[in-house]
Length: 276
Ligand code: KIV
Image 1 (cartoon, protein in one colour):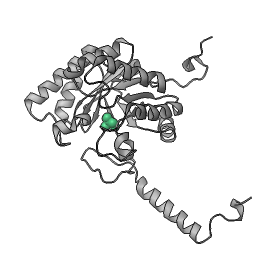
Image 2 (cartoon, protein in one colour):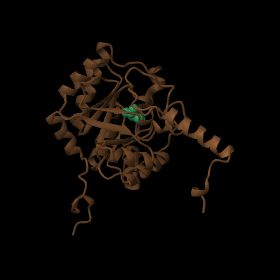
Image 3 (tube, protein in one colour):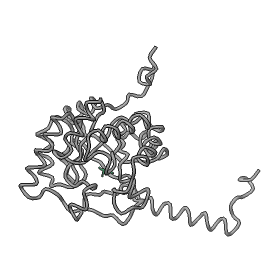
Image 4 (tube, protein in one colour):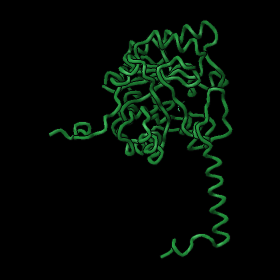
């Protein structure tokens, strides 16, 4: 008898790379959000998210760093393991952090294998095109699903100098399309397009048979991704045009904590029904 969870009666059907391809074919958009811990991952999995990205944005929103560069492979594996424990349906995708795959395809494979083996995640994401081709091919040849990431690639922020929109000029737009086609040819199952003109993202999405997931790339991509802390309004100092806030959790938390502090100070918490 198989012990794979999907083979159990009444099992929730997990999202796979094949299903993502099928979603693109039938025009169903793919919804992706970041998560970095068990409790939030459980909530968003139960709410029906298709892909949970354990993004290296954990470096910003969880650790308070200015960029994604400092987060380590061990830290990414810690976050990914916590997320995987929580999910029943979503595909869990993990960023390979800066410095763990760029220069050397053997190290890239080692990093990807560590993520898959130690966290139980379902795939990895890497930033870049032609320049990381060898690493992408090597990881995929080991059977690990890889998602690419083009446009604004935060691990290269010191090369770009700013977080402004990428590929507005023809040369960079042409290179992005070439890189997208190359990543598809290498076997990537999807590509994140970050902060590029909507018309370019649409053109790339139409040129590929694998799904594109946009962030600040307009409505023509095959799916969308946002950083969960941004869309829930936990972070408030980040206000790019592409960000839609679906909640104002910073204020909800602020009010709740102030209320609690007041209750404790005024000896109104706990009351008799809250005591043994
Ligand atoms: O790390 C991250 O959160 C990401 C998304 C912005 C796509 O890579």
